[in-house]
Length: 149
Image 1 (spheres, rainbow, N blue to C red):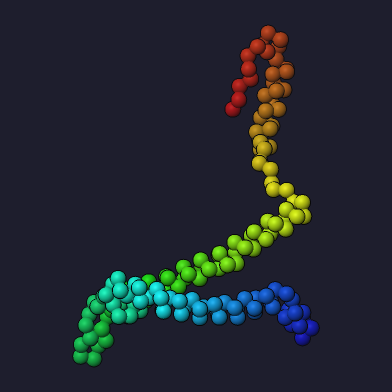
Image 2: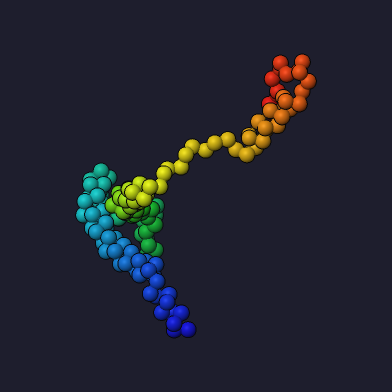
């Protein structure tokens, strides 16, 4: 049982995943700092709010023993900005360069890009059928073209 666990842990996939989680966590701190330090203050200026995360619409004010009911749209905007920043950075810093490197490696290895797709099997069979039908017609009927379906 321990040997199976050891083989699982020593696989490259698990180690790669662990590294990705650690780097992702560190990167999240950078993005959070960027959003809270730069983007939230700019958006707060637009909406006249001192803190974007607290921006919202009060539906019911706090009263005797009841908390206020607030639609906190500022927190949602902040989360969307963080998501978009993470997605943009991951795409341009990781995905696009990796795709480029894979394309270069494929070119060096001599792998050709896929040729455009030719006719399908059904189209070829229809063409063969029409040609055979044209050959089997009487000589006087060969002047007309075979019909295609």
